[in-house]
Length: 561
Image (cartoon, rainbow, N blue to C red; front, side, top):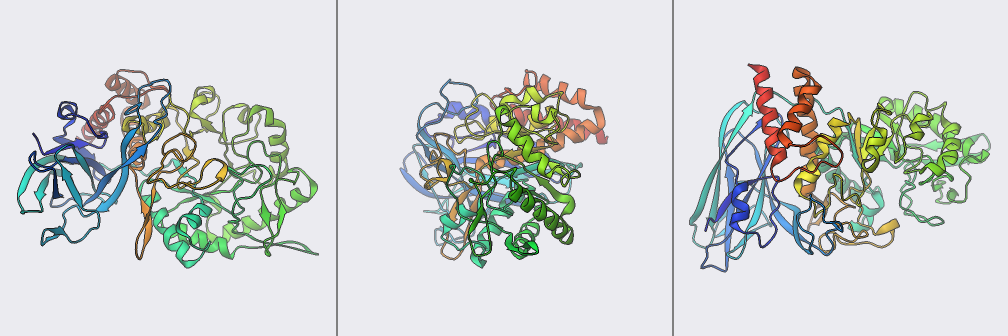
């Protein structure tokens, strides 16, 4: 029995899988460009005669920075694959790997314990567990060349080396171009307050917020929802979510007056963490723009909301005065050219008239700005109501060739398309990169980065123990996990978040290769390698995307010779 196996980031180990299932996936060599991360996993288990064995798993390589995480399992009661489609690890309830808890890549061992982490490892002879390693986690500029990463499994009970493996990595002398895609997962400030029991926009709030946003940026998110007003999202008609409004509003005889001190602090924190773009919270209500968002004055009294006509004189006067003041503030803050605006989230075609009325009230003010909304019908774009439609993956082909400036988005229910459910294969999540490239998308949006609420923001769930908490879509509402420490609370990434990062880096690699050989040849290489045409329903198997990336890397290397 092999106690240590090295596999790629594309393998998710579910309890009960046999060595015969794992062995074809073992990884011995790979390549990366000199400014990108590369992830792999070490699967480990205890000796056959030991039911449980305290162990350490380390990875060392001189010249390569490496980070490590313990892979933890989550209980999934409903994998959400009712039609038994490909791209799911299992159709049955069970334990699925996802949560990544940080640990040192090369731990300090003393008196039989790793002294520099709380996330210790206990191996079992009955099955494998995993440690996730990422080479070059901060996307530094590496020295090109060949490297051997040495992975060691050590027994902490008697300091014996149980197994050793080596992974050969080639760092290619080429760099990924700058990410020019917008990438956003909506962050929910009220959830952070409820989850960690902190006061909104307090010093403690920002300590945790900064950690979450740094984790976002590390995994390629560059765009952040700006809660100028409480975002009108996932709120039952006639009710209110926590007021997270950043703008101070006061009505005086001379007109509306606005204060931006809270927003200035929020933006400063986000920029310091690496955010480049800000998407203003929706100017009108969700699902059709019929009403105003919930907006409060400086005393906390709601002055607009679900009972306000979006196109009524009072709200139109307010929102136009606000936008004029906001633009002046944004210019002062140096973000005037880093903004995009939402009108209403997910309008349907029957709501086109109310959406049109809302757009008309601010169209002249936003004439030089990007407007972008999640939607399923290209008619909103074709009638000139939105500049960059954010197309549902279900309807992406309806937009193709008709909307040259589209984004993509998905929620949790689209089982036949790329998605990031806990139960999805890594490839079904990572293939988003190919979709973004094929559809020449300008960005990607998802509604839930840290949404630990149930549907329509009612109640809360613990993503560690109940990842099906939002409806029945495991993991759909969150991409990272809350971690509670004695002194520090922070965000823990997920395997799915790593896959989203790899998807974004795949787009950059495809564009780099395109600059040398052209788009047609790049797409032909993809289709030849994957054995299928590029389409929104493409679901690669096993390590197909890793194989494709290695071929792309080889082609990029040929460019340089």
